[in-house]
Image 1 (cartoon, rainbow, N blue to C red):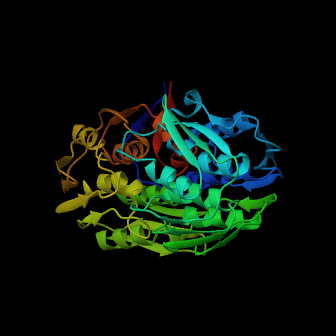
Image 2: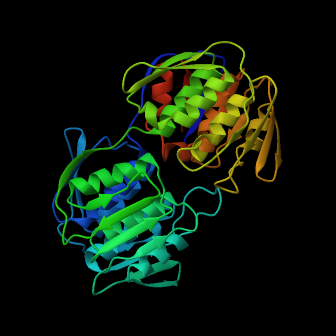
Image 3: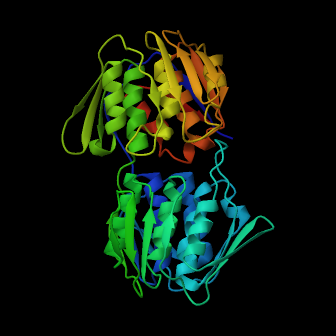
Amino acid sequence: MDKLVVQGGRTLRGEIEVSGAKNSALPALAACLLTSETVHLAGIPDVRDLITMRQLLEHTGATIKPVNGHLEVTTPSIVNPEAPYELVKTMRASSLILGPLVARCGTARVSMPGGCAIGARPIDLHLMGLERLGATIRQEHGYIEASAPQGLRGGRIYFDTITVTGTEDLMMAAVLADGESILENAAREPEVVDLADLLTKMGAEIEGAGTSVIRIRGVKSLRGATHRIIPDRIEAGTYAIAAAITGGDLVISNCRPDHLGALIHKLWQAGVHIQEVGRDSIRATATGAFRSQDMSTEEYPGFPTDLQAQYMALMTQVEGITIIRETIFENRYMHVQELVRMGANIRIDGREAIVAGSRKLTGAPVIASDLRASASLLLAAMAASGETVIDRVYHLDRGYERIEEKLAGVGALVERVS
């Protein structure tokens, strides 16, 4: 099992490039199951979750070939409409193939998803939506079985709570359904819009992606397409916080500043200078003493839950008391105890974390509990004095491509050891 060894106290300077968005690439790969023609996808990051998704697609009958920096995905037919437990036990996004499989071949058998232990992410909304589209659902032996032998039909779906993967899954199911489907209280994340852009290139008829109401008119079949995945806004945000917490100055390239509005606003308030330096780059500069800024996670366009842990690491270094409220997941403070081991002063009160800043962090052995917790510990380690050893970094590998190499390229002292 790999570990990261980090020598703290180094200032990050230079330019760091963001990879394609993992959370956009996952549904894009799932969408390839909707057509027998070839889909060309550029910008797919080489991270563990995407490797698992590729294996899952190949299990169902897809052929995937890397060609000139992009992937060619062809699924002439679905030979095995199943997502077995052995393949998907480490990944929540396995539920994304439910909709495409039922839409394409009328049946699907998918293991209940696994992944990070950050709280309940119920699949009930996926299943409710598929039933509204005419599918029959059974759950037994740890698997979900969906059946629609006569095909799906259009329907109106209202999400009781906003769900990104649920919106994506049902949007993919609806593109081949008979008639019009309406998704209400839909997720508005950039990754949802990116998926709609790909599906539209494939011949789908979708209106309203990026708003809370999405209308889909079903078509008989989809064709192949060429598409580039959007940059990863969570990776870009992680690097912006890395610049701040190390007192550094980073140009973060291949990003979408318009996807980072909530983070940029909060960092500005905290005293971090953020400047757009072109259509696809920002510059994050630490300007001196930081100020505490309370924060509450929200669905997009609010502050992303996937940056909460990283933001908390930064708030350990600012003057004053910061209150952070996690509203999306009920168990997303598992990094707190490890930050405390490094010298942070943080108290949990229900959904709130109270962070007393201006703490001197010191290196320590720590354990990563989930993907974004891993990133927060890496940020804290770079700000700490001495050596930090981060265990279980396979979580980090699920969502960040070559992060230790990228950070080393801008001055971090970080090494991967087995």
